[in-house]
Image 1: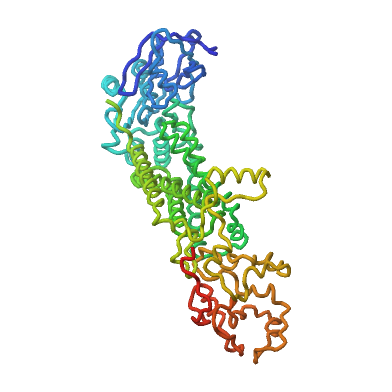
Image 2: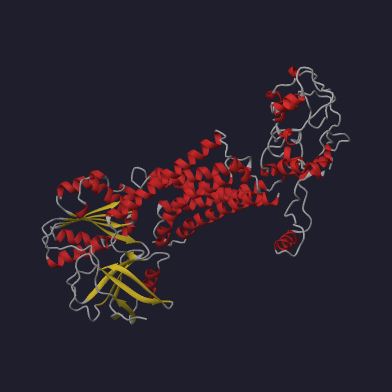
Length: 407
Length: 229
């Protein structure tokens, strides 16, 4: 049931790129007294197949614009709301609009510079801020460092260039990462020297945010000056994640990754040294025990496949949640493998053991080492090897399980 | 113009495709009859290298559906005996198909006698596979001190050993020395040593049990049948 201020969409849809459109709609009644702050967002709600769905989108119109709101949206293959907006936003369609909200906003009268490190569709807060600054004649120094994978991904490049040409306080640097690579520590160091005591706004994908935060913190930029507008490809702009939370989650992944690597090494060592565990060996000789622990391994493997499945289906938000569980399950798998068999096995079993151990080890390294530009190439190769080994290991595991029961 | 997929997604898709192909290829190879041995739990025991899987693993009766139905009925209590799935459990019948002997010092059927209930419970002495667990790549898997289960009260009237008595050996719990003179199944044409000092060393016996050369000689009374099935 829609209960919030409803607006009838009747203004405009503007193409910004192959998958990006801006939607302009009337400012709902009740918002007359509210002046959004540069960088804030709107939550748009509607009914999709009878289900109420709401997503936050950054306001890209100038904050002084009182005729309409504009949001700029990238269409995602599995994006619930973005697909709905692209297919249904036409004259007369009703949507709910919540009042502007969000804590990543900036006072354009502030004397300190503002540096926006934005990636992909994460440009939207910077776009709204630059437009607001241009319309309001802000004196605040604003620099936008805009990263995209390919030139075709640039959104409103011409408009941003025109803004920088007309307003000396606004500058833009576009970075096509496939040609120029991602920003490096030296790039941020140069910006920090050129624009001291800046506020830093980060908006982009999770790896982009992490890398930017890490490099800024390494430059000695205070965490209080780093503002992260966490941007989710499916849901749009999500509530800001704090630097601390991101770093903590990365730290846990690192700990679990190294723990898993140590567990894999310990398994290999005890198997090579032929260590004896009499009770376990007696249990492992029993068919029922082997069947139960084998079934547990297969169940865990099936659960691990969920990450690949949701990623392949493009359900990015779900994949992000699953990733944490995927990493956490790693040590559980090696433990259950050990409960199932303390040896490498023979023939097919040995091939299965080696494949699974290699798959776990590659997964552990991927979890332990955070993304970084230097490690990116190696990480992708390792990711490919991890997927390949998991495919092979899963097939061998199912074959081994069936044959063990069959004979 | 549609966006080109990001490289990481491309890598993932290519890896899944190659992984799926690799997995299917592996499965295709594994179903070939030449590769049936890869399913074994371990290497064949001594002398079993030329056996085919089907020589011991016989197909269970009925179709897969019937086997599963029978198992279900057994679990539900509607059937008195369990049913095999896929293949029958390997038991004494498969072993004696090749190794049946007219004379055996320790035939498995002897352990079915009530007086050997203890040995059955402790060692499973009535089953060939209790001492000769298959797919271990050795000759014998039982510990060489197992004689203690039945021979604690050993009392020989005419002691054949000249330098020490059996009674003294039992008293010393020297169970690892038994096989130094005695061939367990008695399948070698030979006489046991008369002097304890001539007994084969424990390491020699262990080597034999592990599949090494026989210290009891090569004069065998009953050769295992070849291709009994």
